Length: 395
Image (cartoon, rainbow, N blue to C red; front, side, top):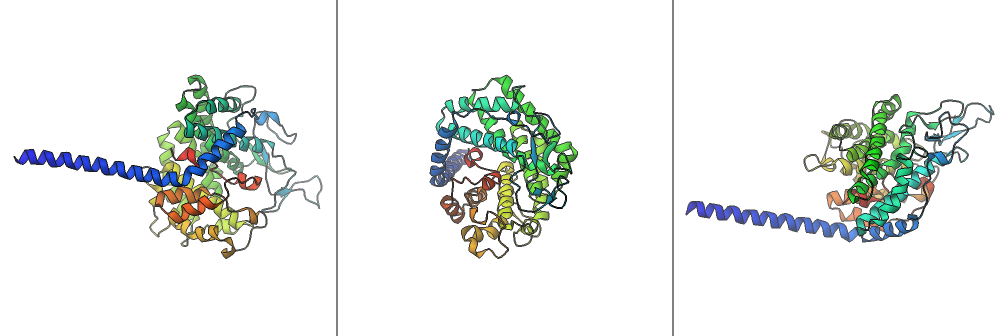
């Protein structure tokens, strides 16, 4: 009789546990869907806009100032200008002031790839319609498969400075726009639309690039930069390792976040002193928080939830959100200097509010995210949005 009652108790406990988990999952699904309906509509609109675009890669525009070849990504430092006292000589730096005459075609092409990949892959997730992936595939093939048009898997010539250097480690920040492309490749593989050979070649490209940004002098310099560059370096490594199922790199990124990024970049209030010291402290603070929260979104597991990780002295992504939230809600309360440019263009639908709102079940964050501009078009804002299609990271 005892054993009979014992087994009955176990069965009932199992039923209640399973039912409870199911109810919790359903509630979480309802919680998400409440805020993501408009986002689903946005990606379908964008996908329809992009579905008939032809591929554009680094081989379509080549700068005569680049010391690389036609397959090498090339960009020039944003804040570097001709020296009026030394015409034709080395450029000089003007922090926060972008030189419109610098070569920017490759970066624009990469951002365009990000926009197309993110929209079409998201539309497939929303609808299950493989036609979206079929429209995406030629772009992925052009960038990573086709010998005539693909990009070399390094950034040796990123953010060059005329008369100074042919490329710099901080140029690696330009490929933050590849993280959603990597996710789109994973979704493309799951869809079954692409051949196994093409998927293998794409993954091989990202394996080569991951190795380069992890082991090259430029990559190590970017990793150790100590500000938003270190965060976006880790964000890229995490996203590419996620595509490749590279557990060693994923574990490294978790440790890097816990032991280096969070304790060294955030102060006791939740602010980022190195970003506040810039000429665009508001925009850079937003950018860094977005990148950090995105890193938590990619790297968190049930066993290692980075959203709920705290340093011994209380630093956490939650603290960062609590610091910046009031100024995202009302930037007239911002107590620091205004940005020299683009002050009026921030904030938009920042991923930190969405990912943080979902992680902490915070209605205020989600309501603010939902109320902000989702159809932003300013090039400076787009360039500084590491996550443009959050649905990719929520399925």
